[in-house]
Amino acid sequence: MNQINLLDCTLRDGGYVNEWHFGEKAIRNITKKMALAGVEYFEIGFVRECNYDKDYSLFDGNDSVKDMITPKQSGTKYVGMIDMGKVIPADKLGRKTKDGFDVIRVIFKKSKIEEAYDYIKELIELGYEVFAQAVGTDNYTDSEFIALIEKFNSLPISAFYIVDSFGLIKKRDFMRLVQIADHNLKEDIMLGYHSHNNMQQAMGNASAMTELNLKRDIVLDACVFGMGRGAGNLNMELFAEYMNENFGKHYRIEPMLEIIDEYLNDIYRENFWGYSLPLYLSASNSCHPNYAIYFAGKGTLTVKSYNEILKSIPKEDKAIYSKDKAEKIYKEYQENFVDDREVVQNLEKEVSGREILLLGPGSSLKREEETVRKYIKEKNPIVISLNFVPNDYRCDYVFSCHMRRYKNIQEHNVDLNMDMKKIVTSNLREASNYDYMVNFASYSSESPEIMENSGIMCVNLLIHLGIKKVCLAGLDGYDTSNRGNYVNSGLEYDFSPELLELRNHLIREEFKKKQGKIQIEFLTKSIYE
Image (cartoon, rainbow, N blue to C red; front, top):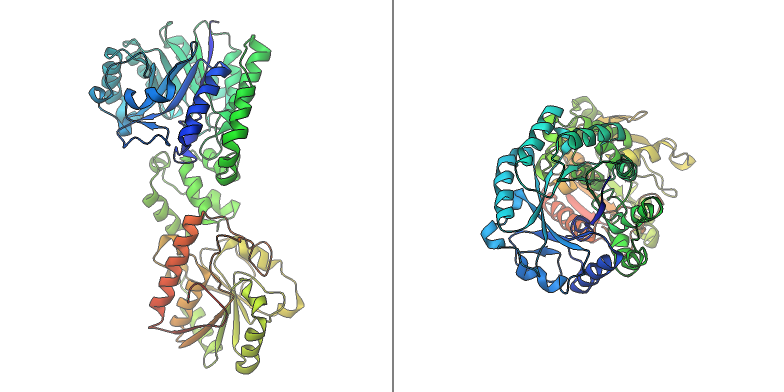
């Protein structure tokens, strides 16, 4: 075996976590510290057509990057990545310069092989070392993979990569790909491995590759603190220590730990990455990890339903993510049509002629308890709680459109509400022991971000039942400063501040639109008023 090299891609692949917004000081210091750590290759960011901003690890060519990397440290080569989906013209990138990028990595999908080949050829002619990286290497058949290797053997590339885009390649399959690549790749071309950690295979695969004692040089990608979208990447500090202990390397771990302490810990607290059940399920179903991130953001799916929705994605769509596609899949899954005409007739008879009070879980139920109890005493309304059961208010019904919340409702055993009836929507495929099921699509919002909001859905149902007025209490709205602001524990949410503001706005607008069909009165303070 010859040289084992490490390539740090914290500022590039880790940048998916924070939209590459590290800040100028962090980019400069991370660059210096990784060179001091002794990594052979340091990838400072993406190279693409953009309005260059020093606070972002996105560059539009050598002129923008040279200020960040000079003076260069000997022993480290400086790398930029170009995505064939967002390619920068080679003539705009310009020739290699001594104070610019040393290496360009080019990633490409199956559909871009020919374009990537021609583009890499141009880059080599401009003087760059080039690494060729086939996205989703495990999606190639063995014969396709061999043909791809043989094609790029005709170019003087420096490295050819196995890329585990979805973090699902397990050791046996990984070893097969390594053996195929090693057998067919020209001897003077390095073999690289870029991992993702959705199924926690990165460390095992990388270490297994080093232990094969290949006769060629190899290069392994990692990120400090494992920083990366979703489940993250191979941890640079852990793997560098493994290399020191087992292969006589002398990487300095202290600069990596300083990067974690000074820069990455704050990002991690705001934007978690690491092992998660949704990302594991996404990988086990061979899906793009962005599906996991999108569906997890909804916060409504149980493990069983999460697995079902991923399995339902057509094979040809699993590898290519789009938000529109994800929204369509989620909506189709949630709708799960049922004919609820008889249910609606029965509910109409039960609520006809009565005042209606909807209870949300906001803390205003306690703060303004006197107002709520006065209304209940004077009007004797039908009380419907939304996705929860209050401990100190008697309810006639609970309305649930959220399977995780409904599981908590089923476990509720407070005597005060033992006799309340359960109304569920048809997206609750796992629901049992309910009294009524209504069709989800008939009452959901048309806005994808709030399509399963219980307040909107229940008001839509009441309109369908012919109710002319409804009072709302405890529908306080999402509070970005206090996410635990609920009368019951276990009802907290985990949306970004931007999404919280959007949801608040959309729900408020929906209630405004309903006012022409039903009179809505807020008994307690709400941002939806």
